[in-house]
Image (cartoon, rainbow, N blue to C red; front, top):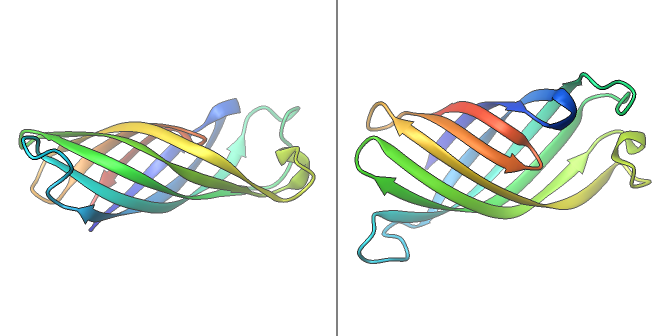
Length: 138
């Protein structure tokens, strides 16, 4: 199991923070000749600021989500991963423009980790709906 904490830099100049817990479900991966791993990755992102006040003037909003992540290990220092799943926006109904305080959305992303120790890594991820993320894994 792997935990990551990260900063979020989303659309409309929004920012926040979040975490993910990566739970391997296929440790040896799906391709025998490749060092890969399949994991389920639930998490939560909390956006607390948006610089475009004309577009968004509500309070903080949450994006809980769960994705399936396919990790590829490129030697001892790097890993990359595509991911896909579902996210839910939870927040001010006025901002969400859906008439309710929540709605589901697809989540897609791609990321990379630089492993600076056997257990820890720097994380970079580009994802929709959460945007660009920088963090660290434990």
